[in-house]
Image 1 (cartoon, helix red, strand yellow):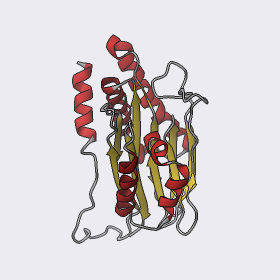
Image 2 (cartoon, rainbow, N blue to C red; image 1 turned 90 degrees about the vertical axis):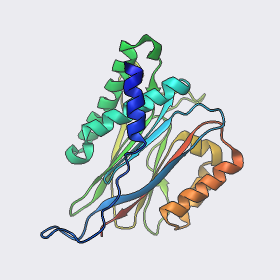
Image 3 (tube, helix red, strand yellow; image 1 turned 180 degrees about the vertical axis):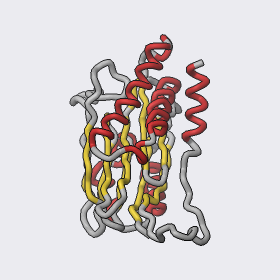
Image 4 (cartoon, rainbow, N blue to C red; image 1 turned 120 degrees about the vertical axis):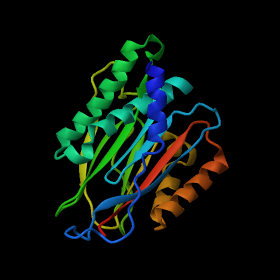
Length: 254
């Protein structure tokens, strides 16, 4: 039963991209609509064990990288993202503590599945989640668990990582969605201006091209789609063994 649910989650997550509507705005609605305009993709690793998943919505973006091989990895990532989407944080988050609650919901979902199904006892996943909070002073709230990374690229300034990897020196996970230890996610908030860019990558991206090259590619000022294409070209040149997921989002107000 659990594998059926996970399969449905994976199928649904692959289609969770929100596209803007064309045409005239209904009377009475504002013309300015703060949102994240995003593109994303997963470069499939050569080892043939897919483990990454991502979700793009108008004010919510999340990525997850499951561990444990083909079946467990994909199941863990799908369960984590399914719990995030179900929590609808883009409609409920008003403070950093709410972001922690969303990460805890993903943690419980993975832990519950692992406890109820012996074959899935090794479920664990990373989670990187960003929420756009619009208003007079727009900001980005984020939650980070694991070895992925969230980057903030202010318009006209140098990109900077908002997170650090939760791993020991040997690469072993220090924090993870589904680990037996209590979850302590990295939670934060940054102000946003129109034209700012936010990028989420799983560790497959940084392993494949390195942080210096990633910084260069995020600095060239190209559109999200062009930037994604260039990242794909870079990864194709090195053929990474593991999945490498990247989501690039621009903050727009019109």
